[in-house]
Length: 342
Image (tube, rainbow, N blue to C red; front, side, top):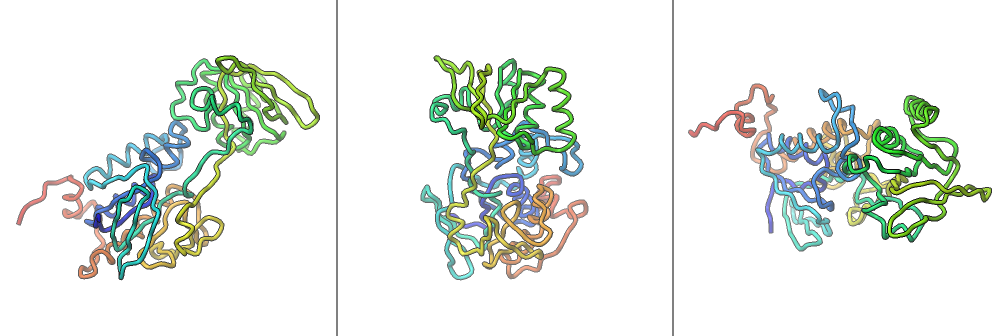
């Protein structure tokens, strides 16, 4: 049984910042994530895609944001339990018992659910024969754009991810963008950029088409597209990228009686506690009036949740709000200054 001040479910940016906010208050955290790597959706879905709305950082990738957060929380020595799912959560007086699918047990007064939108798997192209090419010629996310250099890429999808990667990869590869509708779901600026590249012959756009078959040997060489009228076209492609979104799976969280509505958890806006005392939800998994699904919002939610976590973990101590710029106690925890023994 692992005893800790807080168990955090989810190792994405908001879960990592929760470690920081708890750490500067002197609280110890254990972090559990069902992925095999730290970073959540930022790492799984868009590690190389630019992010523009992190305060004081004009531009960063999902990977660089994760790396910065890991550096920031390094002094707090949080333990990460990756590739594990929380299977059971039950009350034990004022504490919570947590068990994972690998048999680990935790006990803590606080649980912070920072699991993004839960466990997720990509929606796949409806061709069984593509399965054997997954990870070699067929991909549902981009972890390193450089490996697509000089490839002949067919990108499927009509939303932001498909459009953004079509623009980005057109700089280093030959790109065909395929969508089953004539209209794309993108910002006016993105659509304008796509139209320019199309006119310049730098991107091939095929609408309204869907994939019908692949022409294969030992390697993927070309694919056959078709529309609703039966028209078919062959295009060259040695690589397929598909961005049809994700199938969200809350998993055991759905069984914890947290008043889940449409796969999100209602919380109050004072400390982001759920209807269960000591269980908090932050990031995309939580909802409240005026909620914005931004990483910035999740950071704010984590900061306020950490205050209530302190009160529950240290019921005999009075919480004192302190600025990091002036608190020697916090600076000692951060390793900025050496701790002076009494």
